[in-house]
Amino acid sequence: MPRAHHKKVRITSTGIYLPDTVYTNEQIIERIKKAINDPEDPQLRELDADKITANTGITTRHYADMTRKENPETAVNMSCIALKRALKRAGWNVLELDFIIFATVSVGNNPGDHLIPSAACHLQQKIGAYNSMAYDLKAACSGWVYAMSQAIANIEAGLAAKGAVICTETQERGLDYSDPASCVLMGDVATATLVEKSDHPDVLFLHLEANSKRQLKGILRLNDANVYNDKNSLTRPVFRLNGTAVYKEGIRTMSRLVQDTLQATGLSIDDVDHFIFHQANGSMLQRVAKMTGIPAEKNLMNIQKIGNTTSGTIPSVLHMFLEDGTIQRDQKVLFISFGGGLTAGALLMKI
Image (cartoon, rainbow, N blue to C red; front, side, top):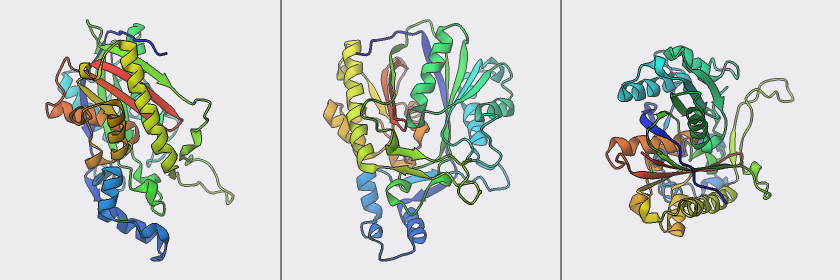
């Protein structure tokens, strides 16, 4: 049974960059039709903009444009903007950063990107954070909670006082539009979360996990862009998911993590001000809330507007609801992640 943890680390500010290009469900459907190129294909029979919204909660998503001549929207460029915005809100100088942890599954999917140097090191140099260590982390949709755990550990261990968690995804390049079940879900975003040492135990609970004996690591997949195929040419990274398995396992895991957190901390649903789940699917999140007794107004969501942005979902929700005043300082927020790996995690913090 997970135990409560009290750590003196706080979230100081957040930043976000959303790509300029917005795609509606109708525009996605046109891409799907072009990719399938067969009006008799059974996948097209149930394809409808309203049904996509009903099944997923999504109406629009943002796509990064990496080909434009001025300010191409690569993962590093977008992250630099998001980080600068967070630093400005915090009133920090970039040289105050002791670490940059970059959670993404999009490394190698951007022009000029490499596995080495990491996206974190590209960003660290671009923004001039010369006093920070920098590295990438790959935990898919659990990227923010996993990266936050390392940020908290670095600060608690005395290795750092201030740092940045970056969660950025440029997923459109890895979508297969002949697979409607997966391509309608995903969007692109860059986020930055600044954390620092606190005088108070603002971290109330932290738990991470990965595969269980059920061995479901294959239900979410993204092949490596650097793997050669039989013709000795590089393959394009393509995202795949087993929709039914992901839906059922996501509900099961996230509901359990809510219950585990409350049991470990001795808190009730009423004691937690807001719940932010990985924005995998709108109907999934509503089902989790219903099963655990979370009121709809506490279940914060932005999947309607920006889709599933993998590691960027939780920090983007946090940023947007801090900005509009829904989340207030000193409120308790429970963050629950679930994603490829399988990975999952729970983090309860005073904001």
